[in-house]
Image 1: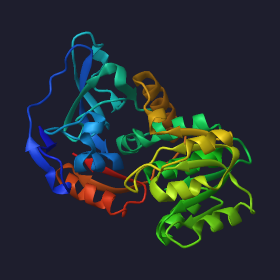
Image 2 (image 1 turned 30 degrees about the horizontal axis):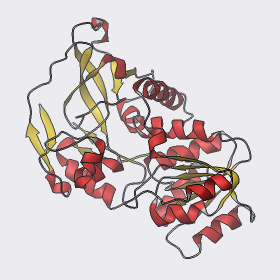
Image 3 (image 1 turned 180 degrees about the vertical axis):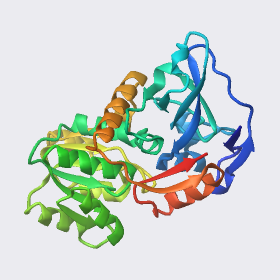
Image 4 (image 1 turned 90 degrees about the vertical axis):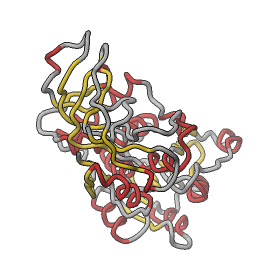
Length: 322
């Protein structure tokens, strides 16, 4: 089978097309022929040298989710899985490949009316986004700031907050991204590359503080956004697309009764991942949640996909197509 392998940390050029042996399903496993493969920003960081922090060292095949059709089953697996359209997520590894081996307990059947591209686009961001929204307890009238609102998960968080009846300010960079965020349901948008962007956020909320901060960017931007949060507010500091997570004052958060959640709080177990993925796919099939798929790359062009992701030129999701 065709796959992408990383033999050493580095730039996108280390994503090299190779031929690998076809996987064989073991006990409790299936093999899925991938039709669409998810990509996420953290995969570029792992490839660039963060791998050991995630338990991933070269050589390895990147990827953590794909949607397609079950082509074979291993011992202990009901043969009726064969031929079913599924999402292979919930901790599956090595999905930058034509064939993906995973545990049957990690499969989520695709509901009628939902294609593999949409399912793959929700594999990570749908799971994490819904988990973040549930933990934040967004209620009607909450003032919600989504930082990194034009990314794969940011676009979903805007929709989830809108569906919950919140007032939303979406922060991103550039007119094209801001226009997308506005179309998805944000009440106002701000460009966080502009001077005084935090003043713009406060003005958009009528001079009031933020009830819920959903930070998908981190770094200095995340720290500045944290200063906007009201006493008793809720913060999810889950993003590091700026190059690092926001350094937040935990003592200040505690003193101000701010609920602070970080990246460790969205490392869900397999059963929760399946539950959240099932919910994401169901919402998408019903038309209540729409993944924004901006670009599709052939599997052999995985390096180009990483370059686009790192250049911040992708609005929403980039997928790989075998």
